[in-house]
Length: 471
Image 1 (tube, rainbow, N blue to C red):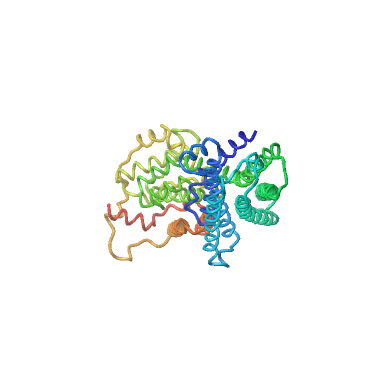
Image 2: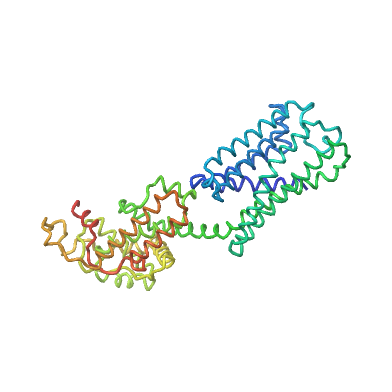
């Protein structure tokens, strides 16, 4: 039974360590949490008979290695507790003293191991079968005293913060963590009491008690891991939905990235980090929508009037496919060097919610991959329009510039939203959720409550004009 529970613990631990590895790039709290889980996973792995026997061939007293690793695990847990409670802010030297305490603990344990006759026995039958040396009793008291104190602090903290937590998964998860650390602390206290009692001359049978005690400790660890996973389930579902949306938008976004590389808000290297989960994926989705809309804003001046009606006559009444046909044709005109059009068609009008934008652009992106979109663009004339290209008639005087229009406002709104998104991306000290919320708010405020940037059809995009002058 204990072997099965140990296997479950190892799978949960190493799986959690792997999943949370990208959080190392977030903040000190996440790094302390990952270090705690990693040290605990190594500790439980070294405790298994096969691994411990292998280590016994390499180093003496290999049976105490899990104890030393447990001290390291407790140190990282203490650091995590200090960070999430703000203890470090009030006590700037807390980290130094906690490290000194952990190192001192390890040194004392190693000294006791060296001076104990016959070494430290770890199995119950061995401990109770012979008299316990005073140094061995001191070893267990010091070891379990340190571990029990840290676990008691963790139990009290998680239970206390669970009270004001919102009802539901978060509160239940925090209480499960508190219950798990309590069970492990009880195990440490009971084991220490039994060893001290035996060293005082009391005879205590442990043949049946030891498996139950080990099961209690293992169950406590499992409960802790489940409690840590419960609040993350809902977030994990949201992240998976967001990644699905990112994948759905990728065909259309890739075209915009290749055609207008200056519109992309972040570098390829940072994109790889975010793909691993370093930043909040929701922020990445917001940026992708903004980048696609920026590209469509530029392409709007290459969409002749009547294109949407003509696409409808070719492909039917599928709105997403009609939009995709328009994008394909506008891209064809843009790449062929055709002159912009003053009063062309516009893009579909979508509601102001970001979820509506994502759903619509995902449908358009899927339709853009269909053969009908490219076939429609291929069979349309891509000859330059009769309106002269602005680059050919532009003069250096300011009086020839058209008066500000609604598009100027839209372009400024787009730039504001893009600036907010870039700033949120650069603010690595903030959490991903905070940055995502800031980006969404900035985008909504800048566009008047809507992320649809296709409000007018008058060309007044300064960035686009600069590109045309270069051409």
